[in-house]
Image (cartoon, rainbow, N blue to C red):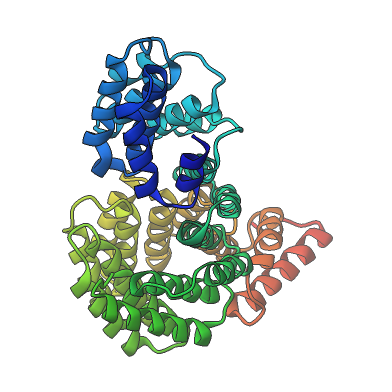
Length: 450
């Protein structure tokens, strides 16, 4: 089987399948059984496309006997059933305890299909043949990706790339780059993309579009918007050649143009993304458009985009969209509607953003005690350093100042906590310094305002 395993590692599946088929037909029963199991493995690598052939190979192997308690046979069968969407109660009882790496690989693959990602990671074992070793690292990467452990996923993809050849190495490095970007590691993403470019001769148009798209994202992450714009436009050019036009590419171009302060052009690119988007993608584009308009001060336009978003089904960030709508309504002075949207956002999980808007409405109406309660709740609910947390901390300090410098200890503590998160050029920076200085003076004098 050594020649077959080498052919598989080299990606020469036709030769491997031909040799295995011949052995299955003309070999001794033991050889035929081994060949059929390996043939089922090979077909399983094709995913859903290989299901029928993989099942057929397993059935023929089983007919030769002695496989009822084979961990490899049962793991392969479990993988195929999981890929078909069968429930856990049909798949998991097939697994037998084993230390055999090939059987454990297919158990892990089945667990991945079942959504049991932690168990899939724990099941993988070293010692696989070369054609499965890089795939095991790819599987590890996909499981870690699903768990949100992006840096670990990137490392797994890179380990897989070290073991893979040709296009498989190239694709794994693209996956690694995508995960480094998600982890906020732009420089490491660029290194993976450089490795990908060196791993393959001539790229297909669709692959080239993906690589340039990832280059654009990495450069944007590294605050190189001009280089990012150049790369995303290369990606768009390759998409034209491939005929596969993803909505995410003009969406990214719009984000880059916003970074460059080119709002009208950015909105044009978002409109192109909207034209390309399918039903489940439209809400993401509309949210970008709504937030961009909100930041630009185009509050009616922001409201229009956000209301269109909320009519879309299944958007996972609906709570934040409601909070953004509440802000757009608040900025227009439509306080009752803003309060209603803020409370709806809070009911769906956006506690900090909703409380912040309720605080702003109360503050503007000079209900300072009520505003203070909302701002304190927002600061407590928000993640430290987030936009909502910074805004809430600033407003607690400001409101306490408006209330006659009540609780100078709290003002001092909150001002010192938030100042490192406020840019020196921001007008809030100077205001917070003044509030802190006044609070310190009051504490030194040992008096408490009424």
